Length: 66
Image (cartoon, rainbow, N blue to C red; front, side):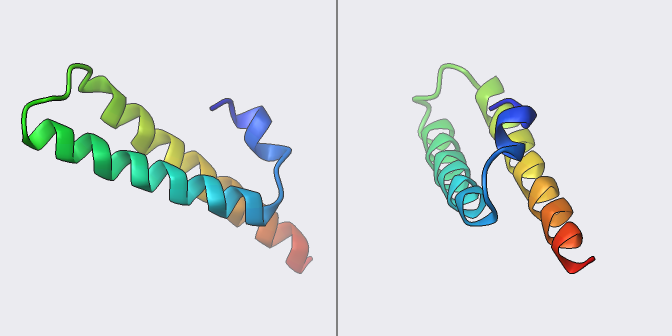
């Protein structure tokens, strides 16, 4: 997901997105373990998406504290 799109979401929506990405990462790792995953690069993409979401959540929380 594009970082610009993520910045438009609220903190609660971002936390929901984070849960979705973590669930997807779990599923991808499981598929990889049993040999069904065809696109292993997707794991890296999902990890980066999780990091983006967490970074934006932190930024928004810091803004709210000011």
